[in-house]
Length: 145
Image: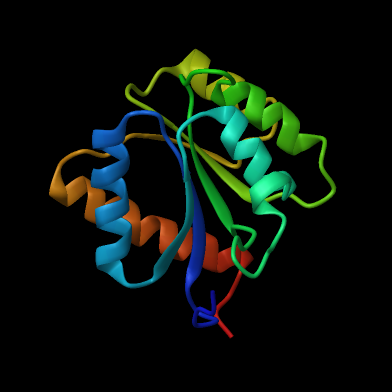
């Protein structure tokens, strides 16, 4: 899969299909993001990031610049995924997403290594704002060449 160098590679880790669709649509609409994988649980996310099994070919399954990580998911939750990521040599930037802005959860997300914590945007205006923020934020770490 060849993509333009200025595309931001993002993995969406979200078990709610309706929200994954809304978020993916907003990211795709911006034309700045390539969603490299939509993991439906933490175990699938770890397999992708580790490049194991079906994900071994990085040409077909490129490593993401950023991971949009839901907290509550089946099999492995977002905190378990985050713990795994912190133990790896290569780490994507991680944005933890939650339905509510809950300060104790926010603090817990930053302890194991989340780079950012955001309330999930749902309405069109907040989604557009989030996408603009994400593009700029990833650009600080992965400037377009």
